[in-house]
Image (cartoon, rainbow, N blue to C red; front, side):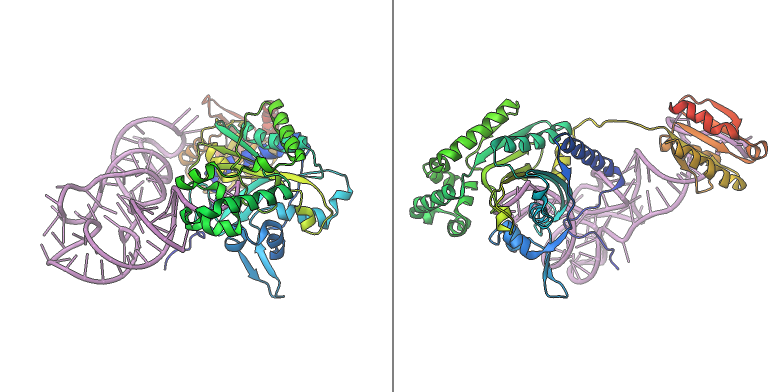
Length: 419
RNA sequence: GUGGGUGUAGCUCAACUGGUUAGAGCACCUGUUUGUGGCACAGGAGGCUGUGGGUUCAAGUCCCAUCACUCACCCCA
């Protein structure tokens, strides 16, 4: 009988780790709120159609990595492989655009892709991200980038690198695509198998190649910036200017091509050297066509998604804040007194004090050891003697001093300590 | 989907070229005069060496298969 393990590429977040997750989540909530973004939570399952249309049928994510199955009513359901499409679906469904011209939204949660796991890549992974829906101005792009940068910085990650690019408007991209194809066509035999396939399906992706020979060929290939319209050019310059004004260092990386179909204009990525091959912590960009493509009004939007597991890997070296709250370990060596101990613990908790009660009926020695192990500041002790005297022992564990007080004075004793 | 690496206690690792009953540190539990933590000391529990075959008098060690984990390609967060 072999034991049941978690599914490949999925991980338990154990108690030893969960504090880090809570810290990260708190930091996300805090920063997003400082920027005026509100949280949105959407279901983990959606109609497969949403991602087929939203993310793109041709993308790897949808074509080979998405978990989908037929439901009893014959509709096809998918585990979300990312969250932007869901947020946009929700935006359209609830007509959020009618509340105000601009929706600033953020989210936290798991997504699923059936990939081969490796460092910083899992089948169930967690993302946080933001979507600013409604503004078509470069300052909005800068704000979103700034928010992402700020979360990572404030979580104690250094060594960050911001890369930005623009893939231009739809027309620009189409022209570029055609020219790129005709440039690469004569070289087709020198291209790798993958790139040959991409040339037909998604030529822009070839720019991402790590193959040296292909890099060489690409050196004199047409550049995307040659196809920018004046508007594209100005827009991108403005984005750069604003990011610069914010004091965020960045590199322009013309080869930065986001793999999802919905991007337009600005794309960006923040990476860290502290990760392995999967070094992107956060990636995003503008997606002006998506809302319309999903059946909403033509609405511009920009956003990003960040991988929380990757953020936590990159944040390994951060110094963790230690805001310890007062903690009491409640010891009992007299079975008749267990009820009293639980009642007084409850009262102390109402004061906001953490109280951990012994429930194993162990020896005094073991209970004291336990108190020490869980880092309690105080032990309160009721035994047979205290039971009959209506008293309770209070031991200050850092000083080692112990005193006996009347049971009825317990609350006032600790009340004076907490304020 | 393709390649490489690794599987010994909860964790980190030992076990010379195959050779007694597979060890250590940390963690865990119990004690050190019976109601008091940390430190120290003593003891204890915990393993079918991932699994299944094979070679051999003898396998943790060699061979094959399988599974799992891991890293990388691909792609992405």
